Image (cartoon, rainbow, N blue to C red; front, side, top):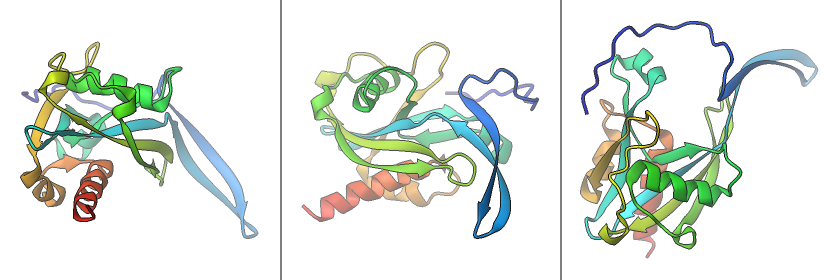
Amino acid sequence: MPNDIKNFKLQPLEDAKFIQTAYATYEQNGKEKSWEIVEAHDSVAILIYHTRKDAFILVKQFRPAVYLNNNDGMTIELCAGIVDKNLSLVEIAMEEIEEECGYRVEVGKIEKITSFHTSVGFAGSKQMLYYVEVDDSMKVSEGGGVDDEQIEVVTLPIAEAKTLIYDERIAKTPGLMFAFMWYFDRLSNH
């Protein structure tokens, strides 16, 4: 997917839909302190393993905040989405798998791995991490997201996953790296 970015500029955030900024003041061990915080939605992320291809199904997309740091902005990530609907977390995960990656899975096939807090220095949102296995019989679309999302579905052979973890040229999320390590640890314990 070409990455043709033009006219990138920063401006004050007005009428935010997904985040709010806040200024926290508090006392810690008798000392007055303050901290700037971004209040953001919690999220779900799913490590998708394609059994026949022996590969992870990931997503590649443009992230403006990453663009500020590397002038590219493209990231490799787990399939994920924010918690902004009146559905259970696992139902949101199921919906994201189909929208972003094109696989229809049953809620009961999605396994919870763990949860953790992301961007703890300024946001602290909670992310629930899941695992699911898919095969070609579950493929219902090409994925790519909804509305104007421009998500590229990436099939990464298991044999290349450890290399990706340590390849600093490729922007990726800590959640993706943790999920890979969880998967390899799980394999070694079975």
